[in-house]
Image (cartoon, rainbow, N blue to C red; front, side, top):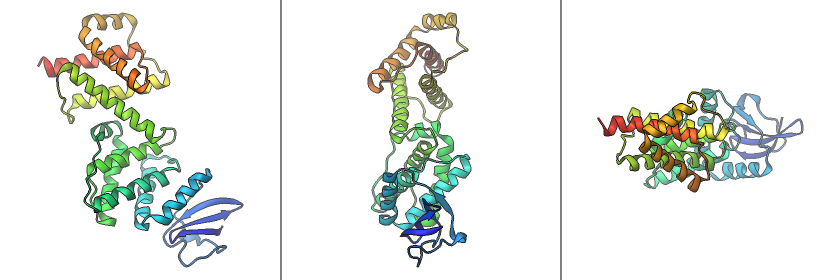
Length: 280
């Protein structure tokens, strides 16, 4: 394994049996030159950027951003893969590092970071959010910068997006925003404001997530027969009407179709909230 190009003191491009690989490790590129062998004991991570354009973006990242930001981002990535037991998409080496460095730059200038999806992120992606909390402690320890919980939420979103087959960031944000909008419609229809730290709120968010997931995959609700469905529509007319509003909204605004059976199930959740928060 010989060095093909030095990107910075801790990152080099190597040729390994004719294949280009990126090698990272503390001091792996320090005082080295092209064609030097890589010191095996300094290797901490090896990965391949299969897309050439991705490699060019990564090269720009490691040659322009502060090395300490890159090192922290890579520690977060390694910790995530270990904690979740998954291999993250290679793009996270670009996306998370670039995002994190920009966020840290803004924070050091006294700028405020706001994440309007924070509460939804906490509920939808709890494992990723916990990793974000770990990252918050790491950043404080290594860089002496305290990131707000809003930024923890953004780190969680990047981690979720980088999980294999989780889609891209735009899709993740769309789904999270769509669920938040669905809750807004339900609150408006019931004329209530739910406590975002309550069990009822968490239960609703979780149910809506699974409703969206089932609708995406075509999975059916086997525990709700047609007779029960008709009874719900008749007995809980207002709740079903609210669920229909939700269905109409996501179809018009997000081009997303919720099957009628899902709307019936959502109506049951709406009725439960109504009983607990309005009729109590």
